[in-house]
Length: 59
Image 1 (cartoon, helix red, strand yellow):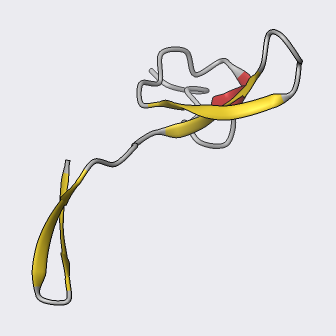
Image 2 (cartoon, one colour; image 1 turned 180 degrees about the vertical axis):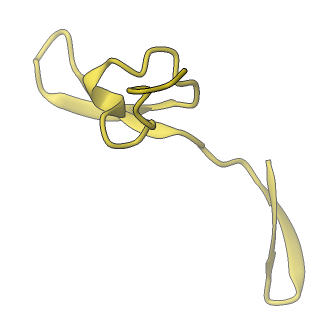
């Protein structure tokens, strides 16, 4: 939940957080609403290339 101030009034609003993971419908194969992902569980997956730091050379 996030508290926002607009026109001098505070509003409590639910928000979605995370990186959008593209999804496809199993029935039609067409794109559907992306799934928000908040946890980087496997940085070797293509989704995290360019986002997660490389571990190359890590001790």
